[in-house]
Figure 1 (cartoon, rainbow, N blue to C red):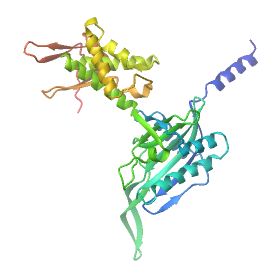
Figure 2 (spheres, one colour):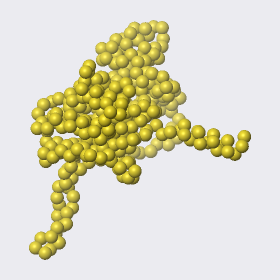
Figure 3 (cartoon, rainbow, N blue to C red):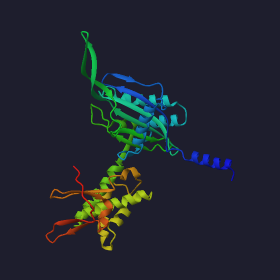
Figure 4 (cartoon, rainbow, N blue to C red):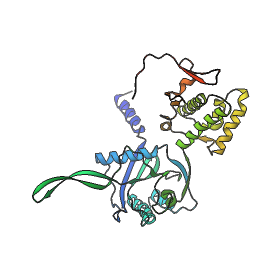
Length: 352
């Protein structure tokens, strides 16, 4: 093969390995109800600017992968779906689409809140699928030093600055991520009106939603614990085992299925009643029978096991250790108490 052909192969392989996230446009609208001031931007943000590009990319990635998000569905004839379709078909520009979105929320929020809200509307592709994200950040106040002139004298003092962005390290609690092709929506709806205890995003977008991935995983762990206690088994072992099962399914890119979890948790022939009890509780708590779980959802919650004893001892260890008696073992004593034995320790470090 010639050098030119080799270079062509390299170029093709590089083209095929496009980044998963491709943000095409983002715009910032300001809804400052504390100052009765709404400012709808007429131009997109400059994503080539290093600071702006980093902020927008971080926000988009954070909400797209957020395990606190709830899978939702638009109601029949939801007005916003027509706006989404018009933008996706190219009938309206991104700026016009974002301003319609901001105006829709402004109509719903005006005179019902005194919050300062910043709305980021972004258009992007993830694995060649088009999405839009709506991210609300609530403005913060902060005390800052201020230098002024009083009677010809330089005076340093303190003043309050309002409308400051929250730290990007904080979790985003109000957002919607929408698949433009399927209209699937992922939403976290913490924003409420000041005048009533009602969620703003789902009300304005006319959508409903169920449990988040994090809530479902938390329910599964709690059910494993409950069933073990109901049948006088060690709940620590059951919780560790279900974490291992969920982790294995995610690593193998398989959906998490409740029937499989029941069989893995209680594999013996005489354990059928426990399996049925587990499945009954999942149905009662409306846990989906099958669910896709992103790897980001199991980074901490599924890999670590934390236990606390009634004697005040707290222990954290990898969940898989409960399946390995050479690492940790639980002994049921004759008096009904439980002893914990930890093996093969090379050294111990104090962590305050």
